[in-house]
Image 1 (cartoon, rainbow, N blue to C red):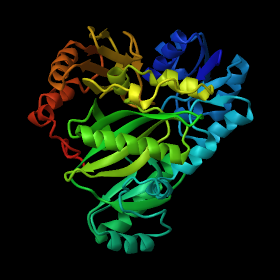
Image 2: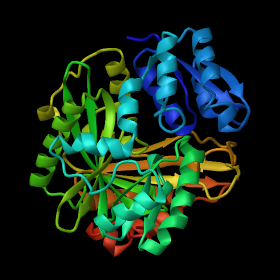
Image 3: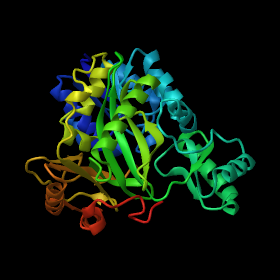
Length: 435
């Protein structure tokens, strides 16, 4: 096991990883930008180093500076969290070259699975249903021909994309060319790769993802599904497990297929298989995230399995000590992402408590919310025996959570969970006017 880990991230996920390390008896090294000098993760870590200016490119994306800091501090491994360098194969290879363990899949695995169009070809051979689409396209003309074959509307996506970047809904042929150039430029700027592919637009649909863990000894488990259909501008706002749209036979079959697919792919680490669920009950594979998800904690609340600790153990070569039969999915857990809608200083913070109530955050009274990073302030997660009880608990917790000094989306979250469509579990990706 590692004796010291550097956390190459910030905010609530850095705090989350530090806490897991402390419980495992592992010393921690924090890195921070000049804008995060007073951040909570800096105070909680055993050692902290400033690695650059406030812009992410000068700090949290500065690969050489992070590697140098890890070596200087005597860390054996680097945990990238999510975002920033978490899916960067070049950085993972740089870790290897410098004798550091990257806590995540190896660089060759990341490269093989990072091209979403190519990944679908790999998954197609595992027995999972894949959304009809193309490989990477070389031109608008090639895309136009492929779109006619697939049939409009189609989704235009970045091969190396994520979130809402490099993605466009193309309802008809006359809108293809302009969107092609916009998406390619956006993808090139965001990911350093402007390649695009097309896939069939499945509408209406729900976004359902499966959490998996796999070790180097050939063991793999699925920890159930999360419903992530409440999205705004392709960004998730609420996640829940289990999905109210998935019945027991569907869940059992899908989990089994996911485990077999992961084994065939030879994947090692924590990962997520993402699907669209259509109204006919068909699951269509979209993509695989080869990192810890923002919403991992809602699965932890339901299963009692610490995903961060298992990421660390798997990276250290320790086999999973439980099997699929040991995974229990009893009850209901829901997470709300609490986002900032303005910059400023947090003047007052009150965090709700009680059994099975969790707020993952790096906020403190006095925390300065800056424009340099994403808007996530924290994640409020609750768990109970039934979905009805979970909703009541979540409503009470949202009402108790107080963040003064910056504008937040707390009222929006209350409105969502009070909506009849959400209460009944009959929502989909169109809930907030999305695709």
